[in-house]
Image 1 (spheres, helix red, strand yellow):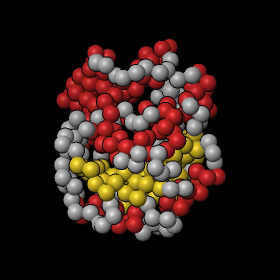
Image 2: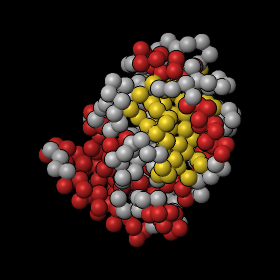
Image 3: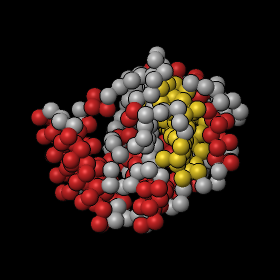
Length: 290
């Protein structure tokens, strides 16, 4: 299987980007072809053979990654597997690409693999980086219902069948949107603890737009993908969970602004999942109401 990699960058982490690209170049087996997308910024110097695309404006995380996909042909068709890697990450092992090839070859239903993210200094994995409700043991691999955006592998036939990431989301929940569409089309998603991306421990709230985007895109996610009966249930549960977390006043104000925006603005095409997909998500341990 032919493997490619998409990395988006704002150009502000040249040393980390170079370290990531070096870790990709060290992968066992056939070389991994890499495309680096400068998302509204110039691309720092990269090793020979790495292709670059510089966008005149920041298209957001999903928009930038979609440009990277198309750099491998329509829907990424020039390769069989695409790795999506954060520019400040680092592949911990040299056999990750080979493990991906083997996993996809052995399981024709497998469409997406979510890697384990570990802090490079402590080796610890944050709970939020384990994409399932039972996240206490990050070393346990399992089937899951979503994946981590900056540390994953996607079979390009999934993208050909269900489409790319929702560019209008800009930031937050775009992975779950793609995951739900893939599951609805019959694909499966694995979390693999042996496929590791080193990444410094960070808080998602470091982004100024975090609370607004999370709330707006949560509404868009439900409106686009859930059966009508489940939309108010899903959003009601997340409203309650948000209040229980007791965010600060400004954060809560931003969250409610995004929640309102999610209802007032266009969210893209609505394709509600089948009820059998709802049951599949439930069987996998995460019913689409939480």
